[in-house]
Image 1 (cartoon, rainbow, N blue to C red):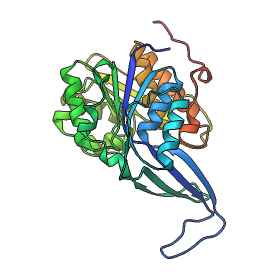
Image 2 (image 1 turned 90 degrees about the vertical axis):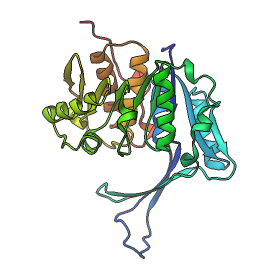
Image 3 (image 1 turned 135 degrees about the horizontal axis):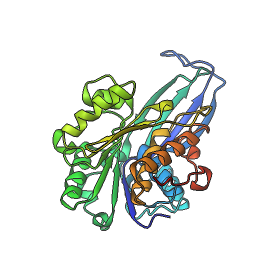
Image 4 (image 1 turned 135 degrees about the vertical axis):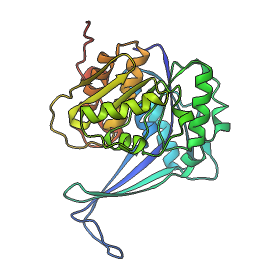
Length: 306
């Protein structure tokens, strides 16, 4: 169990999913769908992953004063996540994602960010234990100004900031400079660097761009190919176990949460990435977002000493 504190700052959503044979055309109504409601949001997913994998986790998020917000907070508490700084907005609704999925697995998603869009730098100033965290983990489903303010504070305080740049959007050089770790997938790395990333060689070229902008460590996740690591001292790829994937939702979130735990536990980079890849590989064999995240006891990981 990690004794070093991890603070996850990010989004909390409720995913409402309808599975139907086909996706409706504009103006069309389809009968016969199956409805599912799941806890989601990248911040919440990553906090749950870090907690289940052994981290001491505080989640900083904002929800609405509604049934979805209350259910989310209750769920976090059951995962032993500190919810002291899950703020409740009295006006805005909680974040919602409406997802339609057809028989082929194709989907249409509309996200209403709600209170997530109102998680502001002024809220972060109320997080009294922010300076005590060893790891601060963020994604891009909250205002970029908030992320930049946190990164600036952490940099001045010599704290390790991990940014999982999803959903992908451009990041300023100021935000990237001094960042401890960035964890894009191939698509996100391509958008952020302007290079097409599809294998180990192109991942290395993209990593060079991040390093040139002052990022200390780069991990580019490559789906079933595994993950590629590079910093100024070393570069290598960790292969993923071969599994039968049922649902890749939250695989990246599981990976990011696992990396936060591994770094907090002072694992070396090779072991840390093996740990995270293993956790993500288990998650894709299950349906759902948070429901697919494994417990630490399920991933059968042993540290390899070199």
